Length: 350
Image (cartoon, rainbow, N blue to C red; front, side, top):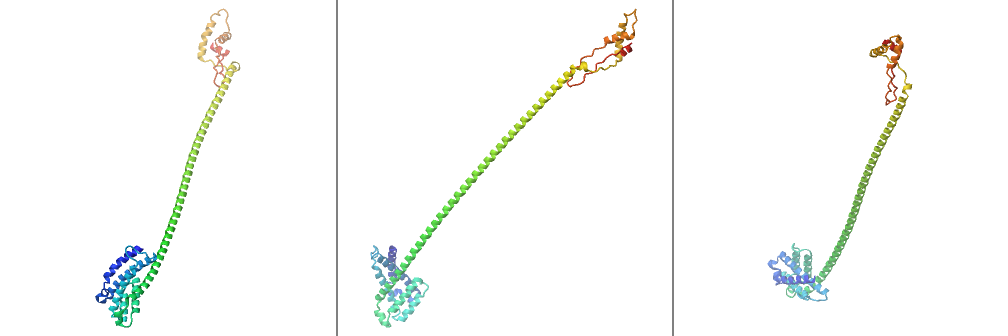
């Protein structure tokens, strides 16, 4: 801050010399209030810089700068102040009322406002307070040094207060800014923490869900495999039962066939004795076949006639075929009746 104030003072001193070379320059151009207002505003900036330099030097025990000596600030202010005040006194012809009216006009211009306008009014009041009613005395013996010294003291005091206030406000603003920044950083850290926790929770939930899904899929696959194995086992069991049932049926059929065969064999063995006798009718072919046999039997008996019935009987008994043993049937069927030639059939043959 001190360096900035010193630089401002150096620049202000050079510009002040250009603007306030003499009293006539300040109130030149026919004492136009607008031009004077702009010039006075620039001079006030120089005074402000000088007060800032002096205040900074005072706060550091009067230590000066290598560029500008702190003691030069009041002196520079006094010179420029004396130039401005002298121009006002001479321009008004020493008339206090004219000086007052003129300064009111200057301080009311649009080119000067705010702090500059306040300092303009303060300077006007100081000039009016120091002028007497004697116009000649004012023109010839006005003590500008006394006025500027008093104005400097007041101006410096006001500037110190203003600077202190600005410093305090700056410190408050910096503190507030630091607090806001700290609060923002804290909030950002909390939000980052919350976000990290939220993300962590989401990741954990997602991992848990993935694990549950995987476990469910594995369980479903295992269940499907078990069901498939159970189905295969049931199929094999069913096939085994069907095979056993078929084998059992075959065994039962074989046993039944064997029993039937045994019955049939037994029935065949008992057939000659138990079979009923059935008379067989002799056909014409059998009769024709039997006649020669009877004739042959009849030829040698020339001396003693034999009755037809007696001769036919033995021949018929001799020539009658023996019944053949029937083949063993697969089932228990009755044996076929054995044909028998009767005596009547023999007689018919003759």
